Image (cartoon, rainbow, N blue to C red):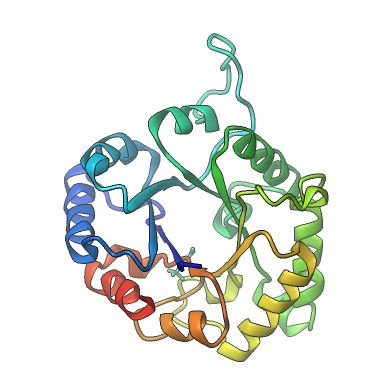
Length: 250
Ligand code: PGA
């Protein structure tokens, strides 16, 4: 299975011009990388322009960083400020990050809303990347496995039961304490968590790692901890680092 590298640009950069420049540098650097699947997740506002640049280079795919849980028919979209998975699908977007810990923390994303968003995205045949992870406090209290199990059970409620072969779901293990801190999870600890998640979700979904991924540690997460991909945040905003990640896992 080719590693899946999902670039989470978060709320960056500040201008369309910068987004275009960043994207073009990445595109140039990865060329036609055939050994890795690359997904770029820019803010919503940059998706139409960037996806038009890529139209002839299908080796790079696009994802969004969220979607709403409703897909009403035209005229019924009374959800100010939201973007539906149907809109994303119609734009040619393939992936969608759901339940990122920053959304859980700052935007009151709950396991219930995450579950609804996952269902809506799967219905539109988008490929959701579900983020789960424990906080530093939970880890210190020895509750990592319990927290992950609880999140998975609730986030995948009635989706999880399907365990379908066609389920286009990726689970991203993103320890909250490792995000944006420069302190990635240790390889053996991450490997243990990987195996634990696998036992819960079965064999059909992909499991990737996120949290201070960089060009130096990327290879170990794939080769030693056996993750099937990575979700870099800050490293994805630095073309040299991001291309380094791709090269080192190819
Ligand atoms: P980071 O972010 O790579 O900057 O730690 C990862 C993420 O939040 O998805």
